[in-house]
Each structure stands twice: as C-alpha cells, then as structure tokens.
Length: 458
Image 1 (tube, rainbow, N blue to C red):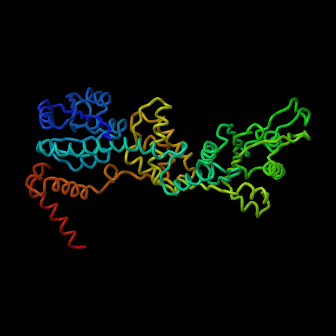
Image 2 (spheres, rainbow, N blue to C red; image 1 turned 180 degrees about the vertical axis):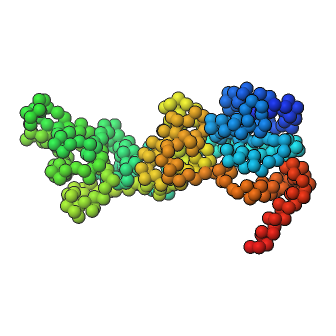
Image 3 (cartoon, rainbow, N blue to C red; image 1 turned 90 degrees about the horizontal axis):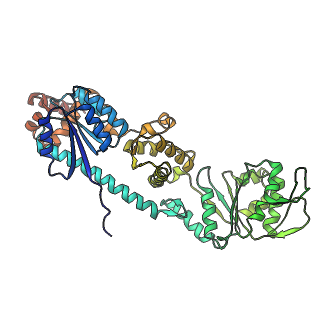
C-alpha cells in the first residue's frame, strides 16, 4: 500500500534587514520549503497568522514590535509552530527568555548557512514525522474501533472478545465499571451482534426515574390503574420486545421493582400495572452499574436471586487509568469528532498538552476525557490544542510541561547547556562554536572548563 501524501512544509522569515532575508532564502532554497518573507513586524505577524507556517525565523530586534512580543503572540495562537529566534549577538538572557516564552531555538546571524540548513532539516523532519504519525493515528483509530468502542489495550481486547462470545447467546448480562467507562456502548455492541439486532434497543436509567413512576415506566399500566392513569401505556420492557433493554444503574432499582423484574426474566412475560393479564415478550436484558452488587447483596440492598439471574455472564470495563495506552487513540478519535461537530480544523495536541493529559488521573474516565477535549476544541483559536486551551482544573492538578519549552534552569546553567548543544551540533569544533555563539574562545573555554571541574568534584 503506498504511503499517504505528506503535506508541504512552510516557513515564514521576519527580519527588518532585506539582506538577511535574502541569505535565508539562498540558504534554504533547496530544502523543499515554501518560504515567505517580510521586513515589517506587523505585516509579518499577519503573514504568519494567514499562512500558518510550520516554522518561523524571527529577528529578535524589530523596530515596531519586539521579537519577544511577536514570539508570545505566535505561540499563543500557533503553539505547534517552531519559532527560531535570530539575533545579531548571542545573549544568554535573551535565549533563556525566548525558550521560556516558547521558542524552539536561539541562533545568531553569524551561524553558517549549512548549520542553518541542518537545523531547519531537523525541524522539517519532526514536522513531517508528526504529519505521518497523525495519518497513522487516524488509520489506527479505524482499525482499533469495535462497534464504536475505541481501544487496542490488552484489557479492551479482552472485553471485545467477551462481547463476541456472549452476544449470540445472552438473555441477561451484567456490565460493571466506573461511571464514564462506556457501559452503554458495550450494551449496544451486544445488541448489534445478537440475534435480536433488528429489534429495538431501549435504555432506561433506573436512577433518573422516581420510585413511584419506575414500575409504570418499565411495566406499563392500564387506564385507571392509579390516579392520573388516563390511558393505557406500554412499558419499556414491552416496547423492547424482540430487541434489547438496557437497565442502566440497576443498583438504584427499588427492592419491590426488583421482585417484579425477576419474574419477567424468569418467565419472559409481563403484566402492566393494574392488569391481571400477562403478555409474552422476547427480550434480552443488559444491566449496567458502577456499584458493587455483591456488597449490596450482602447488605440486603439488592436481591440475591436477581443478582444471580443478571450476572450469569459479566463484563467488567477497566478504568481509563488501567488502559492508558488507549489514551492517544481516544484523543485522536474525540478530536476528529469535535472537529466535525464544531466545523473547525483541529489537527492534534502539542507535546506538553499530551503530557498533561497523560499525567491526569481521569477519575471520570472516558466521559471526562470527552468533556475536556470538547472544551478544548471549542476554546482553541488554532489548529493545535495547547495547555492554555484545556480546562483550568487540569492545570491546577499539576502541569506536565515539555522540557524543551518549559523547563526553567538557572541562567548560568542554561548558558552552559546551550553552549554544549551548539558544540555538539558543530562536531566539537570549539572555534566555530565560539563564532556561532558570538562569544570569545576564552569565554567558551572557561564555561567548558567550569563544567568539567564540577564533574571532577562529584
């Protein structure tokens, strides 16, 4: 199968000096890049927002708007865009502030053209890698979908296998799991794969109906059965004839109703409230609960005989925290869903947003994840969701930032770290590293010597 087409990569260079822009264009001419340039800060910012490039080369010293101010605006709207700050001379203070504000790198205008090309190639490779990953994730979501349920973890594959085995034969099944784990989706999957798939699928939330009305809702009633019963009514059990009834939150069902339900399941017949005449029905019942029915049976809060009738086969759904390997798939699926629903182009999440979501405990499980990403898709003004688009309570839980952008080091330590990065990129050539950094060789040697002396002390 041929690889899917990879989107083109674009770059915007903003510099008040036309000569510098020409040098950038000449250096990157053969790099398969769509290049746009501007010598004006305001026009350059508008160009960035209009073209939404993958890379921005930004002069730190602009007359109308400061390069740092431009950086902040670009990162706020396009957090996935790699912004490289360029200055006439190396300044550790500016480099620290730039990285803190979200810059990908800090270069001087004296950087050799071949080194600029190498750095741009690295970023382009990362961009295209993310594009291919996004395409693969989309395909993986399709391959990992089972009856509308997303998962490829071992626990979810086990759930899918149980559904396949149970669906052709079940009359009653108990589906357990915390709130938000997808119990109704499992009930629908069982129905769709059962012999009764052509019949109706009916859901009843036992906790949402007051006790006095629950029996009428389930069993129906005849006219005059009680005050207000002005006409005959078909109950949900009868309405689900030939199909499947989901009893959601069955643990909240009153004991008196449990007794009547047991007779229906045993005899496959129903009597409407106020009627002595039984009606034969053919239904499958999926009972779902987040409660521990065994403990409720021991506490005499749930009928033991009904529990055994319902739990002949049981499907337990894992918490989202138990299947974290499914988190990227669920994120991709939900982003595509909300992108279509809101009619917005949303391509993915930044690395630090993904890290924050991965570190969050998800006590509300998939439903909470859906809530969070729905909020983020609505709030984002760009195509990539960043941490600032997520609900505030996730940030209060404790951010998990991307070290490349958010790790704040002491100034001296950052300076040494940056010098080492440049030195490595220049294959250890200290003379060229000093030229690229715009510092003297003695300064470079002193930084490296201080680092080595600290290593000796350990």
